[in-house]
Amino acid sequence: MDKLKTYRDLVKNFMREFAAWANRTPPPNTELLCVFDAESDYYLLLNAQWGRYRCIQSALVFVRFVNDKIYIEEDWTEEGIANYLLDQGVPKQDIVLAFQPPEIRRLTEFALA
Image (tube, rainbow, N blue to C red; front, side, top):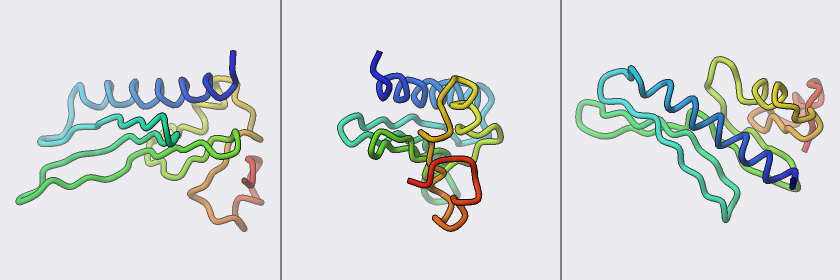
């Protein structure tokens, strides 16, 4: 099976499972939404919440694929999508912690870019 297809499926599974879990008993006026753009290779777990007068959205998890690597741009989950991917057998050299500045990425065991 194609490595990138496997990685995309893992990312989507993580987001779907997390959203299903969180949406079982969400805070009032809150919903987690999975947004997948396969053409651009962007995958987003979006928190949509009604405030007093308007809807407020924020990215809980944002992942994109660049040069055959998984770029984690945003991750506010407790477990962390990087840990999930590692547990599923994705090697560290295929994961970029893109939410970290490049000078900090050098200090991790993950890919720089």
